[in-house]
Length: 75
Image (cartoon, rainbow, N blue to C red; front, side):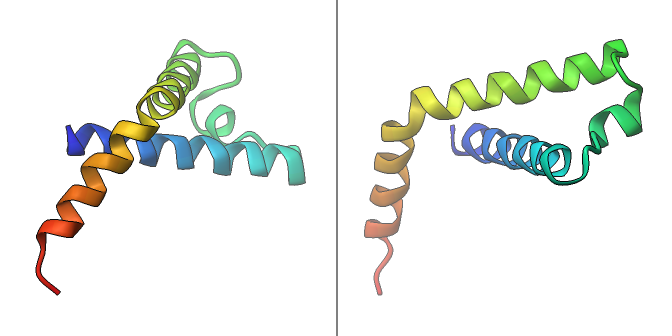
């Protein structure tokens, strides 16, 4: 599950950076790379959105998993 957590986190960061570009410069990187409104760009938006939902729903469980793993490692 840790791999899924990391993949989702990366996708959420990618989405956040894209929104930052849109807000600051009115530049949509996903649309520029994959085409404005193309099936592929819409798919990327959906996957990033699902990653955000996953992160939001799993937040407490992710914190518990990661804190237990770090606690098990001797200092």
